[in-house]
Length: 229
Ligand code: MN3
Image (cartoon, rainbow, N blue to C red; front, side, top):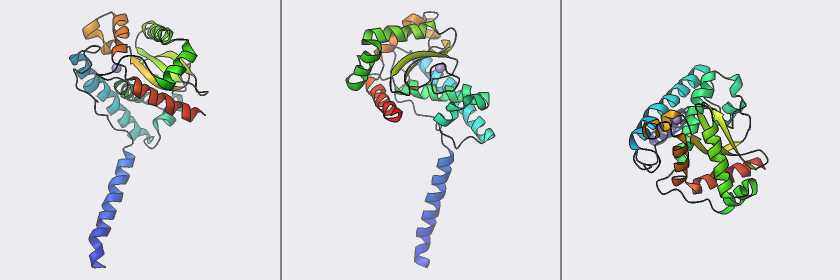
């Protein structure tokens, strides 16, 4: 019995630390590249402030609200599907947390070009051509009055659509006009571009294509489609 004790202690601590991790449902992600890696689109200072201050603040406030409201065991999809019934901080800070996670993920210093495979087929089906899609997306981004986001998302039938949302809303939320799973998002808050582009949001929007990581977007597309059927 005595020889088994260290083994039992190890089991206890493994289980215990695992359950603590389970409660910490939401982590602040590592930026997948350096602050200056996307300078063809986002300058180093903007990137640093955007990630380490704006995104971090959304995360901190979101986690605080989860602790206070006891909603920490729900998935982000569950939270957003009923966001109108939750404290408004879930919508604003949870939205800010999720939207920026997606934004960093779908960009890459070796991004750009055009999508391939199933995603390209779906874009051509929904928008006739890749060029028509980019026009529609850019118009959504430029036309969003004030702060918000432009999206490419998959609806519940598995079809692609372009939309924009105000503030930190997104298509997963029950308050969104068009509901679906976002696979590509562009932040059009002034904090995302003002230092480098000033009031020229259109230049910022058209430079976005130079860094989009289409491989990641396609993975998100295939994942969303598999869930929709
Ligand atoms: Mn932002």
